[in-house]
Amino acid sequence: MDNNYLTAWEDYRGKNEWTDQTDIWGALLDESGKTVKEIPLWVDKNEDDDDQRTQEIAYNSHRNEYLVITDETRADGNVPLMGRVFEADGTPIGEEDFVVADAAGEQTYPHIVYVETRKKYFAVWFDTRNASSGAGDSWRTADTIDIFGRWLSESGEPIGDEIEICVREGRQLWERVAYNPVMDQLLITWQDENVYECALTDDVLWFSGGDIRGTIYGVPSFLYGQVIEEGTANPVEGAWALVMGPSLPAMKKTNVGGWFNVAKESQPNGKYLAVVFKLGYFPTIQSVDYAGEPRIETIEMKKLW
Image (cartoon, rainbow, N blue to C red; front, top):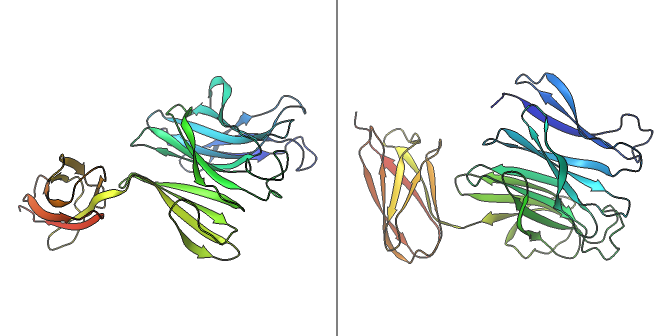
């Protein structure tokens, strides 16, 4: 909303070695990428304080603020994930940070997205809680690394339990997450140094010195489709799709690409009607036979003039 960016990094100013305890600094950038000001996001007051290193930022478009998450190495060797919220100008909201995840071992290298349709954040990280080598050892030598995630509220506070994304023997790390607003689903990917599949349904995306694997997290689709203009095949944005049949009706609006999606709930098999309408077009009705598997439909609309 303010046409600004916030970036962050681990900072060694005043330190001698990269192994010294570090702080998290950030910079507010204007719309052209020029630095407006630097911001001390996490700065310890003395050498005995905790050590922050890997960090991620997500922008909350509804509240015009940023959530910053960092790992924090403590004196006992435990490494939780901590969060802090900042206003659009970089001013911290509240005096204290809060715990995002805190288990045995290390919770580190987080990645977060803000899901606008749910007004929540989703965070993922890799985690050594199940490593047989113990909680105090580094992830660099841990024999087991897993991928965990969790929902966070609009203000950044944890919601519900942590979610096991990929928990197996061996090492799964370097995770990323992206949100698909049409399907209301999350794509989570990671590097898997093993050769077997995870508990969730996952697919090998690429292989080179370790598999790149991924999984879809969210509610499966019942019906998704694209609405296009007859004759030009241009996507029709802002059309309403009303799906009726043996279950309760559902109505969805098409996005800029003309796509819409109805999530799978408890729809029984049978014949459904997709009724699509928009000002300036003839209403269109298309029959859909549902037999338990997601349906993909292309619906053409004819212009009135």
